[in-house]
Image (cartoon, rainbow, N blue to C red; front, side):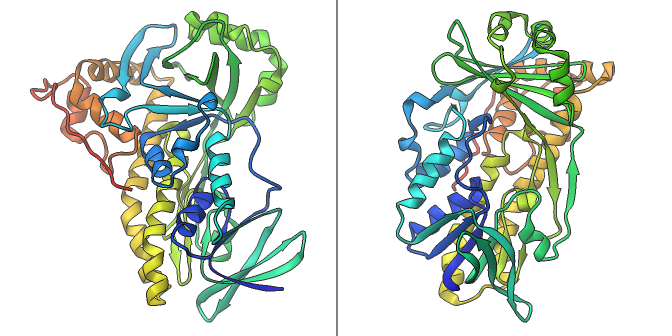
Length: 424
């Protein structure tokens, strides 16, 4: 069977589903395919940064997030392992109305996006359908082939979008080389019930140690704990009491919370990787999200950047369709607009992991000193915050700022703040 659509999207994740919704709202025929049987259901941490909130607000999804599954958080405290506070960040310093982080229960935002897609007449969302190859006319991509419950199908499309993750099959079919780097560490994730309400977030850093705690709805708290990749089974073998003891040493003030870890079913493991590619576009095709630029979640922007990709592409594609121009040169406008911020965030995430997770005492001393400088310096603190929030395309520090952050120069502008709003 052969079907036709304006845009075919492979992958109904954070980028693909948002793109489908944005295009369908403009009346553009869009077909989204995903090999999974349905939207994700597993345990994962969910933090919507301000730029992600702006995307969902623009699409009308943000107000539909259930209040009993979300939590607004303003304050993030960075502490040395053992409990001593180093620095505090206040999202309230950002421009309203996105002057907060939103922590949701697992997959809540994604399910809301999928529900909105399914209400659109111009969009078709098809689960249980696997991408098997591209259809070409000469050098140009004109569609794709799939296999699913209805057998083998061909979908003719003016533009094919690969939104199928770090191990993208679309990228492979386009013969776009990828530098795929798997980090030596991943994250153990847990969600626990606290006896006492927790309203603020905490990051603990130490000798090869990163532990994060983020309040969710009610008395629930997410825990993110960095462990060596492929070590989850070894952690389980040592037992829950050993893990609780480790966490108590890192964050003693949350000893009561850690007692509520009683079963490994309360946990999950999240591997981490980075993807770099020389191009995101080809004639008739484009990559977005992790397929183009997966990054370490330490930047707290991986999923947000896929969503921003989707919005940027949804602004470009109507003109491409109107002009019947699906060339790599035209689609390259999307890449040129997006690549600077993505590249900056990938580098920033790598730098953060290096400093925050260091085993070198000298580097740890410098890391703690920078945090303490940020606690006193409103200008530098705002630049870090606005970068994490997705509101900057430039790195938070230039060379002089780095020297100031290390405590080697005074800053006469320490109390200034320069907002960096970004239109999505």
